[in-house]
Amino acid sequence: MPICSHDIARSMKKEKSPLRKRILFSLFLLVIYGFGKNIPLPYTDPTETVQQLQQNSFWQLTSVATGGNFTAPTLFSLGLAPWMAGMIFWQLLTMTKIFGLDQLPQKQVDLRRNLFILVVALIEGVGTVLLMKGRFIDFSQGQLLELTLLLVAGSFFLIWLANINSVWGLGGPSLLILYGIVGSLGSQIGMIIRNILTYPVWWALGASMILIVATLGVIALAFIFELSEYRLEINRIMLNQQLLKTSYIPLKLNAGGSMAFMFGLTMLMLPQALFQLLVEYFPGNKILLWLVSNSSSTEFFGVTVYNIVLFSLTMLFAYAMLDMTEMADNLRKSGDYFTGIDPGRPTAKYLRSKQRATAFIGATFTVTVAGLPLYLGVIWPKYAAVVMLPGMSIMLVGLAVTVMFQVRAIKILHNYDELF
Image 1: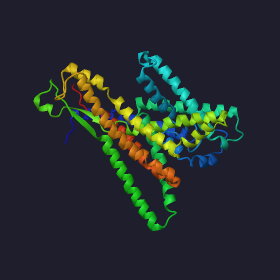
Image 2: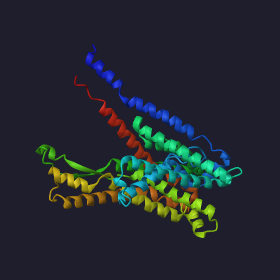
Image 3: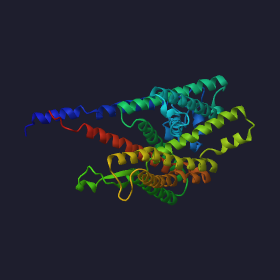
């Protein structure tokens, strides 16, 4: 069958789609990222340091959630942790409006936010170096400064990679974290298999089947919650009667589940690094020593704090998605309304109640699946790698869905025929 000129033009247009270019650009950045994750820091014995850090499940989990590498002292060990923690605290400062940050020009906001992230990076960098202190060769204050600056520089370079990937590639920061999760799954699964094989064959087979079914179940639930939404039917006066039945405002059931899990770990990392730094200068302080020993996910206190932070962040992300007061005001101006609800404040109150309910459901699910299992890792440290899997599954699903939605949006955007 002959091919018309219109088909040829359409084919050429599709070839010009930026999706392929974005994919290639992101792959190039992942090569750089993978190379940097394997550049060791100076003055270290990598073998001994890996053995030390692999005993701390908290640092393993944090490295997965931040795109870093806390199982080995490398240039990208901090990952995106300073940026993630800094953005959360900066968002809280902006929402409180106590410093008038929302009134500043954008350039001033960017400068102060970056300086704040730099301070966070310095604290986390020093804490990370001090965590590895016993494995450095001839450790000194000069080496502490040098290694901290290298970690901070590596982190900021990684933040820059994530930013340019947001502009020219796919997935933004999420892609780097997704790459880290996939890369770490192999080592986590290998560790689990080694532990299972220490038992009799019949027990190992049964445990393996239970683990596989449970993991697939968590992934399925994560997909359901990630894609589910609660729809508020609304009457829009500018739509005809047939379309009114399909008019609604969607509220995501789990608006910030995977993001809350990742950001929660980075928020716990900051105080741990700070405590580690303070203990260096106040070695006899019993309170600081207790906090260093008990604030990680390997202790009941640390897991409890983490679950509180995880629940709070999930609620915060849900509230940050939509400003219900602004939405109610826009509905009032356009004349749209909910049946039986007066415009203005009653509508805002109604929207906030629905937002609070959906946020509570999402937060409860996230804590139940990703937070509570960590208590089992405290009771049975041997299975710490197993209890990490639910949280990693939630992160994996959330990040994968984000990338898939972006790919779909790009394909739709560049799939229209030209008018002329």
